[in-house]
Amino acid sequence: MDTATSLPFLKMNGLGNEIVVVDLRNSSKTFTPEEVTAIAADRMSRFDQMMVLHAPRTGGTESYVRIYNADGSEAGACGNGMRCVGWFLSEGGARTRFLVETRAGVLDTVVRDQTSITVDMGEPKFGWQDIPLSEEFRDTRAIELQVGPIDEPVLHSPSVVNVGNPHAVFWVDDIEAYDLGRFGPLLENHPIFPERANISLAQVTSDASILLRTWERGAGLTLACGSAACAAAVCAARKKLTGRKVEVTLPGGVLGIEWAENNHILMTGPVEFEYEGAIDFSKLATVSV
Image 1 (spheres, rainbow, N blue to C red):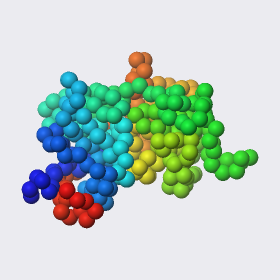
Image 2: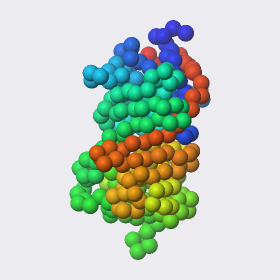
Image 3: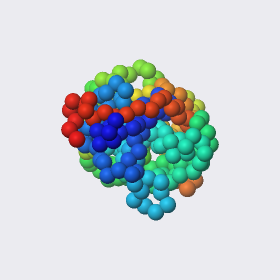
Image 4: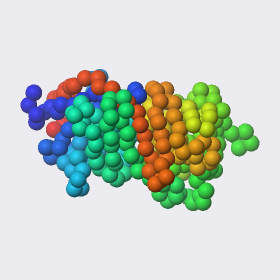
C-alpha cells in the first residue's frame, strides 16, 4: 500500500492489555482524535492504548511517545505499553536499555527478555493540585468520595495519586464483589477529577501482594493497567498496608512493582507480540487524510 494512505503497526499486549505500536519517527504524521477512535474500532487494529513513536525531542532519548486511549484522548503514561515499546526498540532483544520520553517525562526501560522488562515509571505525585483534584485535600491517602448512601456507602475513601495519569484506588475486601463496569464510568468522570481518573479496586492479600481490577480512563475495563498497578503499590505502602516491593495480580497476570528509595517506581513484567498489520486509512470510514 502507499504509505500516504496506510501505516504499518505492531499488535502486542502486556498481560492482555491490548497495545498497538506505530513508528512515526521518520514521518511528520500526527493522529487526530477521530483517526484514533476509528483505528481502535477496526477489528485488526483494536487497542486499549496506542503507542505512537515520534522523533526524539530530548537528547539521549530514542523517541517521544504519544499515548492514545481508545476514545481518542491522550494519556501521560502506560506501563504495559511502555514495555511493548521497549521490546520493539530492542529489536527482539538485540539491545537492552532505552530512554524514552512521554508527556509524563523521560522513562528508563531495561529489557532482559520478553518475559522481564522493567520500566522506571518516575516519581508519584501525591499533592492534590498535582493529581489533579478540583478541591483541596491535605491528605490524599484517603479523600472524601463515596458511592452509595451516606450512612452505608458501597465504596468510599479512595487513595489518590498521579503516576503519569490520575488514579483513585478504593480499598476493598473482595475485588470481585463490586460491579466496576457500572461504577467505573461514573467515578472516572466525577467532578472531583477535572482530568478524569483511572479507577481501581485493590485488595491487599499480604505485606507483599495486592489483587487489582481497574477501569481505565478512556479505555474502560482492561485485563491489566501498569500505571494502576504502580498507583496501588505506592498508595498501599504509603498507608502502611504493604512494604515497598509487591506483586500486583491483575486479571491478565502479575506485575512486580518496587517503590525504590529514590522515590522512583520500577515496574517489571512481560510482553507478547501478536502480529504485524497496516492501518488502511481508505477503509476507515470516519477518517479523512
